[in-house]
Length: 79
Image 1 (spheres, rainbow, N blue to C red):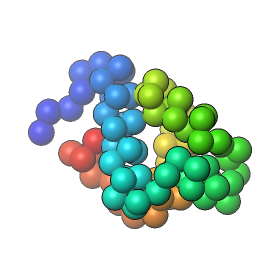
Image 2: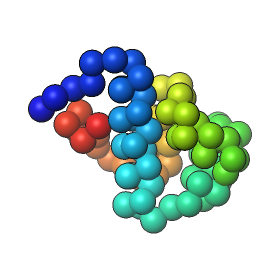
Image 3: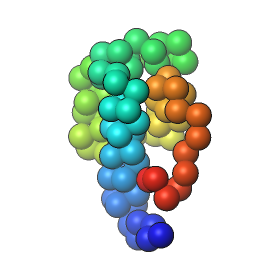
């Protein structure tokens, strides 16, 4: 298993991972925004799209998004 070597690579892989999990859960950005409200986040479709496109988001956002999606486990080799 090869891990990213730079902060940018980590960010890109985390964003890709979140997109993959969204696709698996068959959720849209709008639906994720609604689910994240349950976890204290005020996100919109646009704010989520921007964060995932840039690959820059805080760890609390990433973790809350995974919980909102219904992801129960994360394997480092999947990121």
